[in-house]
Length: 251
Image (tube, helix red, strand yellow):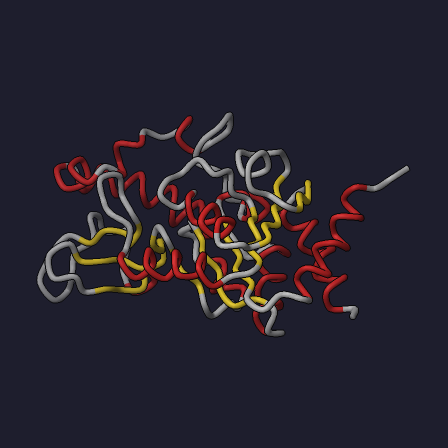
């Protein structure tokens, strides 16, 4: 019986080993095995919490209420998450020189914790807090989240997590660098992304238009699978990346 995954893993290995510039593009699906649920779908976060806590106007008008929920989701629940084999495989690929950059829609900091150095965080990072008044930044561990809402020690301004709330634009540097990768890369590895969140979803499409080979890792087929994917590796991110890493580094 033909094992399609095995065939596509070998095909992916050859593609990666012959590439000049590889970029990984990751979304919520890569962090599910670290215990972080996706935001949408049957068991997504927004079936349990009201999205209004991440609306800028609501946040400024009700900072304590918003922060109570934000603390619970992003610092008590997500704060326990650790990098899984998919994150670690990408870190190894970068260290060995195969991977040039990661573009991520995730805000969980797990790529950095795994050891990656070049990460463009399209939606920001929950481990950093930003003063809404003077723009001073803090690492979250510098702030006592038992006292809500947290305030800036320089100006007294309200602190917010340094990720994109509803109603905010994409950070300029992350936007510019991410689309630049779509111009440079000859291979794009999509992991745990469905292609539903814009403008991030258009980055792999641009890469494909520029001639990049698209390798996709997802448990189920997505909008990308049906349109731009060249090699589809169906399965959990951690398991597939673990197998891919073994093939890459046994050579």
